[in-house]
Amino acid sequence: MIQKLTVGMLQEHTYFFIDEVTKHGFLVDPGDEAERILNKIKQEEWVIEKILLTHGHFDHIGAVAKIKTSLGCLVVIHEEGKDYLHNPEWNLSGRYGEAYTVDADYYVKHGDVITLEANSNMNLKVIHAPGHTTDGTAYYSEKEHIAFVGDIIFNGAVGRCDNPGGNMNRLLSAIRAQIFTLPDATILYPGHGPYTTVKHEKDTNPFFNFYE
Image 1: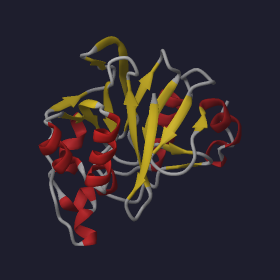
Image 2 (image 1 turned 60 degrees about the vertical axis):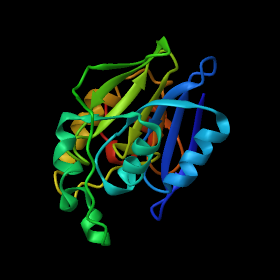
Image 3 (image 1 turned 90 degrees about the vertical axis):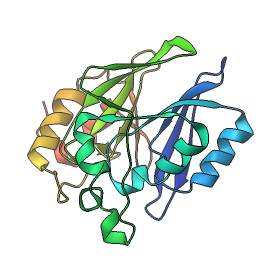
Image 4 (image 1 turned 90 degrees about the horizontal axis):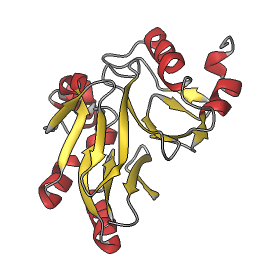
């Protein structure tokens, strides 16, 4: 089961990836409005085992601390994410008068697999695709044919690369190597805007006019 809430001033998508049998699952990128997210979890009687972060920008991590304190769940981010979580200039919160930091419990690397404790058949593979940020990560379920891609790629666009750690050439190379090599039917759930598929972006994304 996949559900989402769109939160905060940048209309960021927070995703719930839940096992319908056990009601355990993962929370991806709780960016803001912690109480609203917590109310949804309580209403549905879900058990969130881990918070998965696609990258460390403020609009994706803003509700992490409060949710972690309330639920006692673990926070996971790519190993490059420490630079963002602990630095308000890199996570951009300093630009909006917040200047907050966040701690993670686990730092993962490309190729790691995150498994739901309540159901070992439900897992997500860590795909490192830097460029929007150095820690940019997608979480891919081969079984469900989905990937939570954060701000790596959008429907018809890619993540901006003019903030700390950003590099457009690196991002485009990473998308070609890590995202466009997933099966064409894979549904991509981005941090903003509508969902899309690997095939749709390979065929129509204007940043890849010369993709072969």
